[in-house]
Image 1: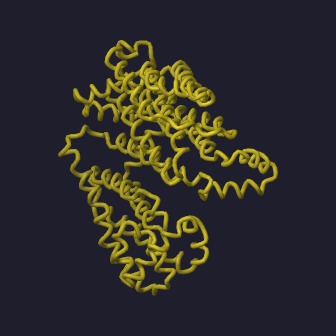
Image 2 (image 1 turned 90 degrees about the horizontal axis):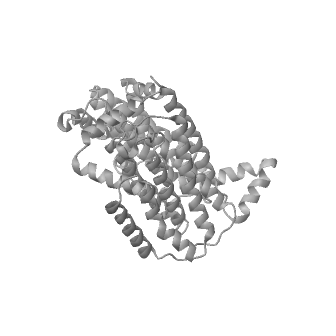
Image 3 (image 1 turned 180 degrees about the vertical axis):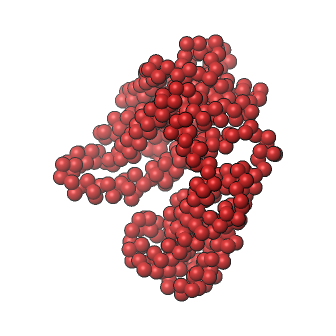
Length: 465
């Protein structure tokens, strides 16, 4: 059993599930942090697994109760004893409106604000902090904290618990597929957080960017490279971090995959799940996506945009896109040849082709990821995350279609996605290393229509390759 499989088995133990629920409840109730954490999604997933395992409900509610009480208690103490430091540091220094909103709520409801605020999403994580700042008596806060948590905890975990307790009977799911589902859902949540909140924090006005800038300027041998990179504007910290994280992740993940000498446990679970999900319409859609994501489909998709780059005399953009697509194709070819992993199923048109990494997934990540990055540069900073979320939403079905057809393992998709992020980061770093004039206004409707027309012709007239 590989390390990943051992980790999955460990994560299913009752004690680990209770600890996870406690930590999620604590973090989501913690001052300010709860505004940034998708607690409802996380707790629903954890409680669903607990319900699927028939974990005793009182223990689960108790874990959520303790976490909620501790989270609000810590927040209250921070506000009571460290008011000056809290309001002068991130994230309140960047978002003073959070403090204003919480203060108005506290002034409106007074001593009942802690109790009521527990159930009001936008202000819940900040009200205990405000209560401490406003010197609410500790006994009053304790009463409101405990009584509200007693009502909140069961309401928080019951939906997920009941879902997990009944999904096997009502949905007739195949056995032992929950960890594959959790792995896919967790990956999507992490990507959404990284490319929304995380991407904002490593931008020029984000707290992590400012922290790194202050730190580096105090280190003599790093100060000059940082100043040199910043001459053209913003240091590409986001691309640098993406490169480091994705390169480390794909290296570690590849070692785990090749060490197994076969499919991972989660691969078999995912295969079982998608065999159960398979039906004629879903299979037909997946075969269409397979044609869109192969060499001819990607060429048809990108051809109008390449011609527009030529017509606009932006050879630098055309070069970077060509390097990205050619580079990921080369890496996929080398990876398949080096690792030699067999596919779960090999149709005639894929005879001789190997499995790891998934070329469809990696190429899709490169095309959509770079497209999102180029588009985001022309948008206001606060709206850029929508472009990245759209890219994730489009890339996900393309990747999962490979599991529907049965030509890849789930671990192939993860490896392909990480490899695609490495190439995106490298191309972005090279693009950002010096100032470049913005691209001219683009005829989006015309180019998109042309791409869709060419892709439609490719789907209708040519076989998969």
